[in-house]
Amino acid sequence: MPDSNICTRCGKIRIVKKEWKETVNGSTVTYSETVCPDTECQKIVDGQISEKEKKFHALAEESNARRANIRKKINRTKSAK
Image: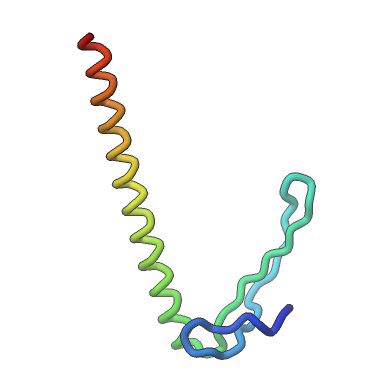
């Protein structure tokens, strides 16, 4: 594992928490989950990641709703002709 995996918050070298392999389209892929050795720092980073994920999902839902509204308007226009 490269030593370039550094905590984005405190700068310490992250450690491997979990490693597993999966087969994807016939290829074996190795995944590694790394964490900061400072547990308090990791809790803060996890919270930041969680907030970003919530924001991303909210934006995706809003985008899907806008697309659905546009489709409805287009369908109404087509049926009115």
